[in-house]
Amino acid sequence: MDEFTTPRGVEVDPGRSITDYLVDQAREHPDRVLYEEKVGEQWVPHTAAWTLERVTAIAKGLIAAGVAPGDPVAIMCRTRLEWTLVDLAAWHAGAVPVPVYETSSPEQSQWILSDSRCKFAVVENADNAATVDEARSIDDGLPELGEVWQIDGGGLETLEALGADVPDDELERRRADLGLDSLATIIYTSGTTGRPKGAELTHGNFVLLCVEAVDNISTVFQQPGARSLLFLPLAHVFARFVEVLVLVAGKPLGHTPSVKEAVPDLATFRPTFILSVPRVWEKVYNGVEQRTGGGLKTKIFHWAANVSIQYSKALDTASGPSAPLKAKLKVADKLVLSKIRAALGGQARFAVSGGAPLGERLGHFYRGIGLIVLEGYGLTETTAPTNVNRPGKIKIGTVGPPLPGTSVAIAEDGEILVRGIPVFRGYHNNPEATAESMADGWYHTGDLGSMDGDGYLRITGRKKEIIVTAGGKNVAPAPLEDNIRAHPLVSQCVVVGDDRPFIGALITLDMEMLPGWLANHDREPMTIEQAAKDPFVREHLQTAIDRANATVSRAEQIRAFEVLDFDLSVDNGYLTPKLSVKRNLFLKDFAGTVDEFYASAAAERAKGTPA
Image (cartoon, rainbow, N blue to C red; front, top):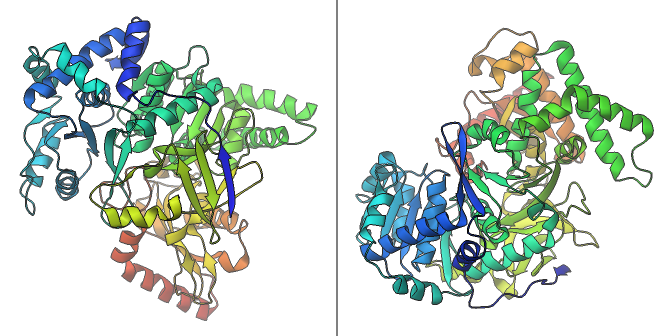
């Protein structure tokens, strides 16, 4: 079994908790800006002293309301400053925050709130409160859930007033009782299969991992003027990791509620490092391409993009980029690439990408424009990252070596195993699932991968998603899907083929990109339904499939595809909040569509017409 360990670099007092880092910042650097809040069109700074004062007031309010040490407190809210303030306040009160996606249905909310036995909840608005109210009427209801406070309804101010008489000593006592082993949060896996499981993460999981990351990758997190904008949902473990990371590093963090609003906010907030999922980097690239408007400008964009990719690839050679290539890059930068950097705020030097494979093409493109994307890997159960590329040694196409304090191994069947400081302590109320996932002292991730001699990990697929064709060929769908999804027209792709004679693909179109793409190609406007059947559109989708097919063996190649006349989304339940397809649910609900697809493809093949 291949195994690689990166040793610890920093020792931490076992009596420490996340709360100590805010207190330290306020005491040692009271005027240091920790957060910036967008008010109108302006970013308003908030210092460490202001933050601690506000967090303390909310924490006292929770105590006065009856929150006891160890009580689960739900947070249901979009990404905004108040989310972080409530999170920190709950920790200061000794409570255990339980995030609930603001897009969750009443049924999903009921499961999380009941399984975690939440005693109180903080929600963003009346719609979220209505969801919680509806959840109370499902199954056995939520008999243990008490007060629900609305942020937009003055709920935090109510808490602050309620806690005015709670003594400082009580708050300090609760903080002093916390340590690295204390439970910090229960995060329910958004999961592509089955009911969500609650991963119990400790203060030590966050503190140790963040301290090691800040120390080991100081070039990114401790550079002068370092700052980051958070637009991932804070109900996701990656965003929570970022929340604690910047607190440990003492660097400013801005909040924006969605990916859609992130692009204009990036330009005004001007982060130096950005943490995101690959779909965002795909949309930035495709969006810039679309805005070229077609014709000569689009050709110039493609030329500049190719120069950027060639330059990045040349950086990995012994001789490095040639003089002519450097000259081409200067021209490409003036015409195109500098505009992309400006759209990201003009200061971003680094990005950390996780949640799904980025793809080598985008990795090289962004490095060529001057944004070094450090691709990483991790799961909810590992407090986000186990592995990440390092600025001084990047291997594009891999997710880098383990972070300090982490061991990664590859089992005989190719499954990725993890142990060390980031690994959770178990699933809440689910000892059977905990035992199954933690066999032999390793956490079994369910992902497949390979590792080189330097410990750099390459993700090759998902163990439970392996497709076995009628001919017995094992096919990992993820690499094919990721490659196809890079096309500007494609929103989602689901590769199919279990017990079938060949591999196929079901594709949905990006409704935001379609109008601009059609205009750039001198085509008349179309509806999604028309575009799904249009020969010109299908021809261009075939090029994306051909590109994906070139990366795999013939037996793994996609032989036919169908375009669906709707998209998959978080709202309709087919995407997780991190934009992963809920494959099992999709295949269950659309089994008839898959059957029709193969029947149609077989009929076309029988007639001798390409499917």
